Image (cartoon, rainbow, N blue to C red):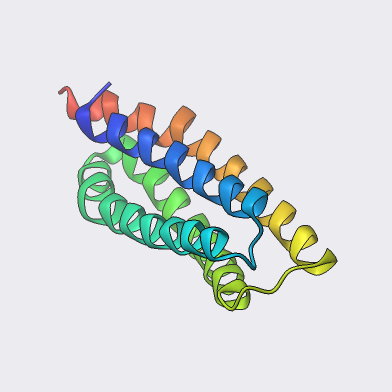
Length: 130
């Protein structure tokens, strides 16, 4: 495993932990809001790192380019969902709607993370060693 993919996987774990902590502490509490904002900031930094360091190498390799292009396209939709979610709840709303939106967001995020770690990062590790 490359240093980059190892870092990205750790970031995935931290982002998910922060979101779970925010929910457990209560999104309307100061602690919950702090965790929520940290998760948002880390997710944005994580996406930038992928754009700056991961995708460029993959798009240079013919076989990997198709995978990178597919993931990049999918990420546009996921980024919009993430941005909408964080924007909607940055003012500490809670209740049933938050619980539903949070569950849907975590599900989408978890699915994306698994796909990245199993497919995209594996491809990067394969290409980066050549």
